[in-house]
Length: 241
Image (cartoon, rainbow, N blue to C red; front, side):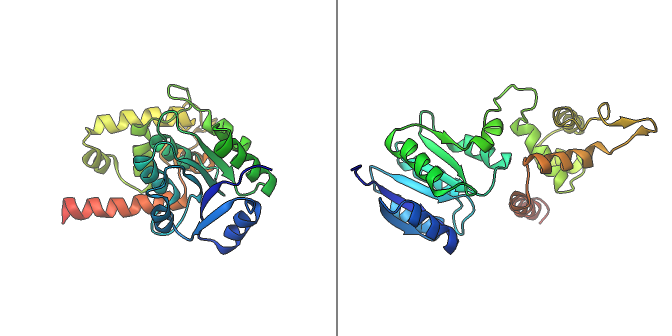
């Protein structure tokens, strides 16, 4: 019989938390109902296995992962989420240390898939990325459709409704620099006017079209825009207050 593992579960939704506990019942579980509780359970442990939701109160899953890996590079974390949005994978890529073992499992999967992912990550020391999001995860820097961090910033800014002049002020750019980034963004998203013309001239506004494509692709979503709005208001308060 396989030796049970010590696993921390971090999930604020009672129904999802019960699912995790049932699926991983063969292991020794510690349960946290938010990211802060999970962090307190994790700190000080040398062998650390964690299954955590992405969206949680107090500390979200991505920030939880960043803080855990700051103290323990050997920690193994499975991010368990209902979201396949590229925005989350972009955030994860920024915090996952080199050579670190992790997993990403969608909540739509069965308990058997979750168990398989847990065995792969926690026992076999191999990464496990949900097949449904591998096409997104596989995008590498330099690819034709890969949005750079600088382009992602202006994407968020136009989604928040900022003008070119305001973006320039916020990002310490010239107006021409903003327009250059937007041009590259439009091209990569397929929102530039060269690709959306019809027989009557320009069919779409590139700015609005880029936001629509980004939403459909999962580059931005309502949750992340809410966070971005809070960041914008803080910046406005500091700059204009």
